[in-house]
Amino acid sequence: MKHDVKRKTDQQLKVMADAPRGPSCTRKAKHKVISMTKPIREQAITDLYCSSLPKKICIADLGCSSGPNTLFVVSELIKTVKSICKKLGHHQSPEFLVYLNDLPGNDFNTIFRSLPRFLGNLRNEIGSGFGPCFFTGTPGSFYDRLFATESLHFVHSSYSLHFLSKVPKGIESNNRNIYMASTSPPCVVKAYYDQFQTDFSMFLKYRSQELMTGGRMVLTLLGSDHPTSKECCYIWELLAMALSDMVSEGFIEEEKLNSFNIPKYTPCPAELKTEVEKEGSFAIGILEVSEVNWNANDDKLCPSDELKDGGYNVAKCMRAVAEPILASHFGKTIMDEVFRRYREIIADRMSKERTEFINVTVSMTRKG
Image (cartoon, rainbow, N blue to C red):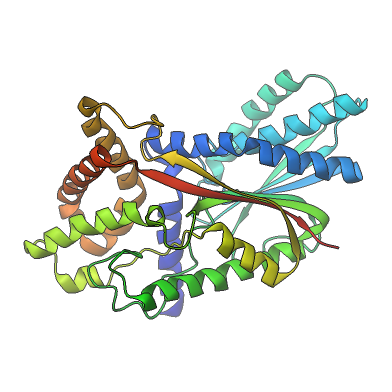
C-alpha cells in the first residue's frame, strides 16, 4: 500500500510538471521565463569555465520533461562555452556530458529520437571546434540521489522544484481549498512550508554530494515576492472557487473537495535563502524575482474585447496542467463544467487586475 501511494504521488507530480507538453501558451510561458533568466545561466557557466578550464563539463538538467523546451537550456550553455573558448583562443571546446532527469514516466525516447537533429543543428551553428557531446537519461526523483559523488559541474532546473515530494500532512482543515489560500488556516500554511523545508533541504543535500567543489547550480521556480503574496497561490484559489461553487450546487461532494490538495509550494526569496544558508554547502551569487503575465502573450492588461480570449488561454493552460490529477480524484465527467466556470472566473479577474506569475531564480556555487 505504501508503494502504491508513493507511485500515485509520483504520477501526479509528473502529470503536473509536464505542462510544456500541453498547449502552446504553456510552452510560451516557460520559454519566456527561460529567456528572461538566460543572463544568470550565462554568468554561472562563464564563471565555472574560466575558473578551472575543464576538459569535460558534466551538466544535469533536472525536471527536463520532453517538450520543445527540453534541450533549449543545454544548447544555450554549450554555445556560451564555445563563445568563451573562442575569446580565449581555444580552438577546441571541452567535451560535454549531459544528464537529462525527470520522473520515470517521462517520455525519454522522444528526447533521444530528437538528438541527432539537435546535435546536427548545433554543429552547423557553432562550426568547427565543437567538442564531443554525450547525452544520458537519468530517471528518478530529484529528492533522491541521482548521480555519482562529485561528478557534476553544472546543475540546472526550471519550473520543477515548486512541486513537493508529497501532499503535506495535517491539512485536513483546509476546507473548500485545494492549495494554500487566503481562507486557509495558519496550520495549513505552516504544513506546506514545513514540507517545502524538508524537501528543499534534502534536494540541496544530495546536489551538494553530486557537484564538484566550485560547481554551479541555477534554479528557477514558481515563487512569490514575499511570504504573504497572493500571486503564489491565486490561480489555484480561483480553481478552488469553481470547484466550491459546484459543491454548493450538488455537482461535487464536499468531502471529495476537502480531501483534495495540490503538492506544491511557491517560496519567496527569503525562504530560499534561509534553506540554502541552513544547509550550508552553497554560496548564493544571485537571487532574483521576475514576473510573467498569466497570459504569456501579453505583458499589459488586454483591451476589453480580448479579455475573454485571455481568460480562455489561461484556463486552457491550467487545464493541461491540472485536469489529469483533478479527473483522477473527481472523475472525468465534470471536467468540462469545472473549466468552463474556471474560465469565466479568470476572465473576470483579469478584467479587473493585473495577474502575474512570480518566478524566483537562484544561482549558487558549491563551497569547498
